[in-house]
Image 1 (cartoon, rainbow, N blue to C red):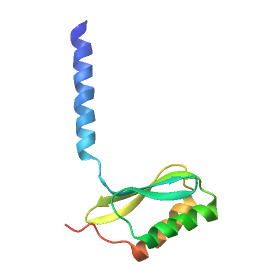
Image 2 (tube, one colour; image 1 turned 90 degrees about the horizontal axis):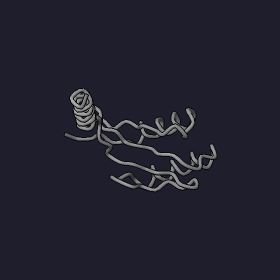
Image 3 (spheres, helix red, strand yellow; image 1 turned 45 degrees about the vertical axis):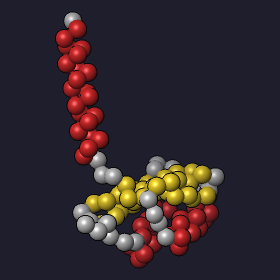
Image 4 (cartoon, rainbow, N blue to C red; image 1 turned 90 degrees about the vertical axis):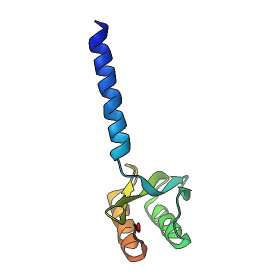
Length: 104
């Protein structure tokens, strides 16, 4: 009885470890609290942070997260569910104009 449970637990631990290693790491994280974006890890330009604040104001976004995720030497944006599709597209458009690559 104990052996199947131990096998399942060990399998779950291995899957979690593989997922943790394989997932893309964020180059930066911007958290929005009460409509105010703040960088919690990494670096973004003050201009991009101001653009996030403007989009939040325009679309009345009070909380959420904007992550810069490294994919193939480029940084693409990933969003929490509370950020509307229109806001996401505006931020992607701004990022394509002012964003930077992840380097090597």
